[in-house]
Length: 69
Image (cartoon, rainbow, N blue to C red; front, side):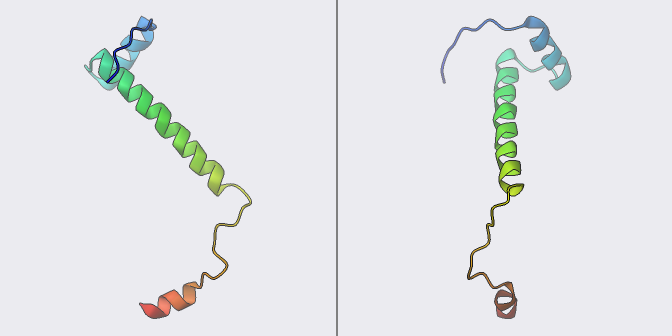
């Protein structure tokens, strides 16, 4: 844990508390950081799967794999 002093927009904090319930400011900030990270990771995945790159190995044979089942 890191103890930090920051100036926050009290209106944003109050709105977040209303939306997410009676959580503490610390919980609201932690939730916000986790959401920010999750959105960034989702964007990375979106960008990855919407690119023109091919992700299937050259030796991948789904028919052979099905026969093994």
